[in-house]
Length: 186
Figure 1 (cartoon, rainbow, N blue to C red):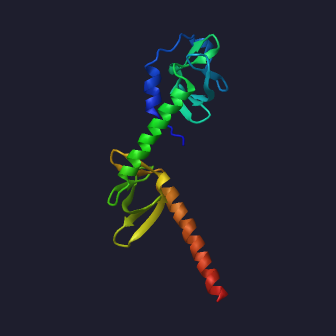
Figure 2 (cartoon, rainbow, N blue to C red):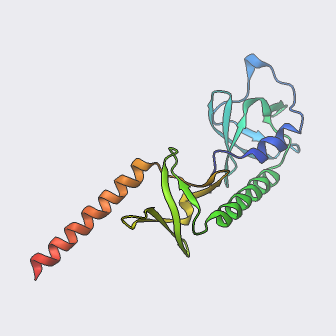
Figure 3 (tube, rainbow, N blue to C red):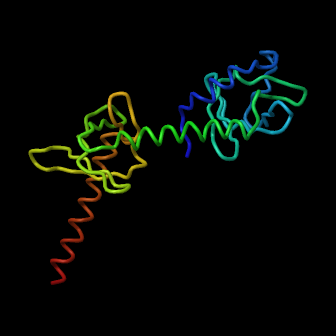
């Protein structure tokens, strides 16, 4: 599981002083291997943009500020090992999952990724979360647990309202087509 916002890694890495590097000869380039404190590889830089890098550890894709990457005799370096970085990310992901699961309760308000009100959680049935969109019409949508995050304001679906509406239209179109086929077959 990959998350774009992993603050724990950033905090832990900024607590370790970066080694000196010259601004005009930066070793922070796509494809460069970043080493840890003992010179062992931590990961490969997958992307560099706007002062940020994506470091691929083989297990996680970790966003870091370019300023968090120093340089040693072998090139780009950071102050943690691959195992330490992966453990930090694993712990943060576990905390995010725990917070999400605790927030997925009937009655919780659900917002979309584009900050629109989707509805309230009606039921939680294993990994299927049923959201009541409109009480008057009993309009419901079911999404998998993995499409939700906990937020300060409640629960956020990782989908925009447009994506949800598009999926519902496709599902309703397929259901209508199947109903028409069943009717014509009789």
